[in-house]
Image (cartoon, one colour):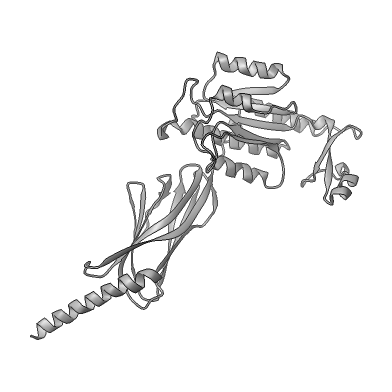
Length: 358
């Protein structure tokens, strides 16, 4: 009789505990996940910090946390961590009452992009496994992965030439009477170039742009097609060439900015969250933080062709004070004809052909 009473009491305790887990604990337990660094470069390693808080006095015998995470975020081996099929991130814990658990998971970033894990599925249960309860929690975990920056020694010769010419021209004395325009002051601008009258009028420092500074802009044009007759989108395994061209464009823009040139890029690919049929244009400029903004925009590019490249070139607003560098997987007679037509109108445009193996 005593054994039966013990079994009944034990069963009642299990039922009560299961009810507590379902009605009370699941609503109060919280999971927070965040990346240590909000911005990283492709190829970098950082950390994902996972925090589990149980504000109740009740023991949670087991807690499973699942999230769907991109396979381009490679997690290292860690305690209580499993990756299923390179798609699902799973953590398993036993959580005491009033306990906070903090785990640090190493993450290697394999590909450029913006990654966001919007929710995590929490499943908790009792020691017998008779009672389980599941809920979803928003984690708002995101990270921006900048493109890999190509070694500057591998930059195409058109940029090396332009950078060299500009570096040489900067040492030439400007004609003080040949003023083309004014712009906002930037760190490093010569004190003698400050336009005091314009600065007083706008209430912020302005500097003079001399006529002999006309050719100081560079725009990189990325062709999203891997071949001239491409119509459909590329499969994931076919996108390597375009990814490498984005990395090359990032290195070129940064090198141009370091050499005092204004830089920008355009491509027949859309940005994340934009209309899938809208191409991307960021015309050359140089201002504080522009280098990081360019990298962030390049990180957001979606490898999807919006316009065929000949049609896309027709949409660009060319300027005489800008040098253009086309990065493409292919060359063709029709492309050369179109480039020659652009040059005949007085614009400077070069073509760099690469299959993307870098």
